[in-house]
Length: 459
Ligand code: HEM
Image (cartoon, rainbow, N blue to C red; front, side, top):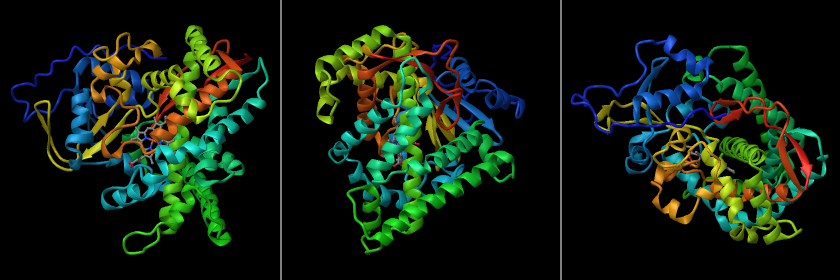
């Protein structure tokens, strides 16, 4: 359910008094102005602002200043050219209970050290050996499907991706903890449903939503500590990230603290599971609506694989499969927007914004901009030709972020989504369940409000 393209008839010139003026945007209605964002259709509200105000607009919510940047050149300034003047800021501070000081929220020297230590585990060559597990787990899920059943694909995929992340990164079978993780995830999304500013403003209040969140996170945390202790006491070493985290030493010979290991494990599970599930759920939603795309996809699978399951070595030849994923990530970017906080005054587009401004970088808006994507609301995997990609401005497409804090799991996610999609599409085709209509809820990620209900038919 995407509403309208962002026909950004943008005037890139700033007003004469720009250096003193704030960018345009909805103002002067401190609380009322927040209501559509909190209780209405948040995505439509931001789309409306982008249409009305152009590439830079400003919004103050609960006293926090937010500046939206929707031009690729401006986004590149924040993520790459001037990245030293930004921190994660408010987005890192709203959920310390779950992520702690893990890779996605830490800053400065701690982040640099942890990224350096963890990067090798996510290298393309390292993760290639996980391909088989990804396919096996997917086949196991498919074995429980019955033709003609209505299924919530989002929920099925959620189970599956957590199992895969746990197996390949921690060599763990987390099945017994999946229910707990799902509770935690539901409580997390309920908490962040009204946007980061609202969460930030309400974070210390003992609301039912906050209390449930604390309870589920603490319960899941106990399970994670249990896993760490088991591994430590067994002395067992395994070729996985948990072993890397336990064995790694910094320049002074210091091991990572138990708390840091917990934070990194929770971060990887939190960041890797939900996003991958969403990417595949939306890819299937579009395949169900576009039989011609599905037919092209299966023709490629038949030609390259015949009846055998896919392997990592097949991926370079599964070109259309990759385009389907790429287009799903464009149309429905799982991380629909993310934030950086300026630590210094920042001049952009003729405006000068003060330190502590939160810059919102929204793939949702940029990915739907007709200046960069013809018929932006159409699902057209064919658009991803080499020539098209060459011409595309670097930050017109950024589902995995960019710059030094780009997603560490991007190669992992691309491999996993392609292998899972290929394995599933070989066996089943899906159509949307009668009466189902996709409704989106922008929390920290882009959630389907009522899942993705499909009827699976055997191929
Ligand atoms: C389709 C799937 C995925 C999408 C769309 C996605 C998207 C993103 C985005 C946009 C960021 C940058 C956020 C920012 O700059 O504020 C990010 C960071 C991150 N992602 Fe992913 N991600 C995906 C899969 C994964 C997977 C599978 C893992 C781990 C197994 C993972 C782990 C992380 C981590 C740890 C970070 C923080 C990196 C850092 O700050 O150094 N992600 N992801």
